[in-house]
Image (cartoon, rainbow, N blue to C red; front, side, top):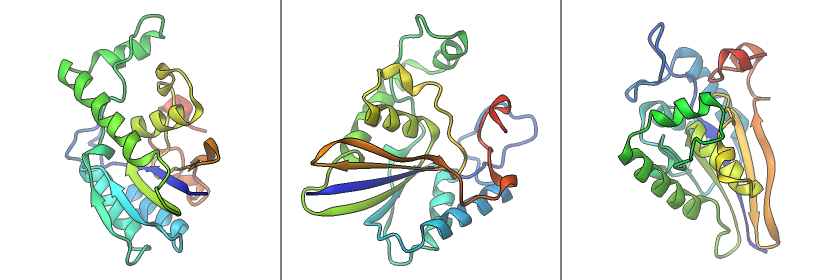
Length: 207
């Protein structure tokens, strides 16, 4: 029976300017983010990945590069499918106001292009290989991970909202011919010491 273990991780903490309210696309990793990525690589050392895929933004590319140091011989590919994009043009009606404000920040083109890329990402990554087993690592952003978790659970489309991802947290989903997807791990940060956990979350969610 063929199966795929899909390893998903959000990039490490980005090096945001003091007081920045959002994530400028050109920003790379902070010193903490580089340490998170290195520790994630150590956690994954020895996993027989078929490939590592990462989004094109610097914070994802740098995270993948640091993780790949612990994965010698594993090919690494940049792909827009793992980029930072709106996964679904969700109707804000009947949603909490904070979600409505978030969705209102996306342009008309982002509302078209993001869901298109996300559908292609599902087709590429959330599938069973044609022959045998494989393991893929995708270094991406919080929205795509949330969408793939929602997809695995068969939850309503709007439930991608409200899933916050730790920087360098690890989510693993198993796909097989034998049944629906299985969540193996979600937002696992066991490889990070306490002082490196909780980054990337809204302040009210940190513990």
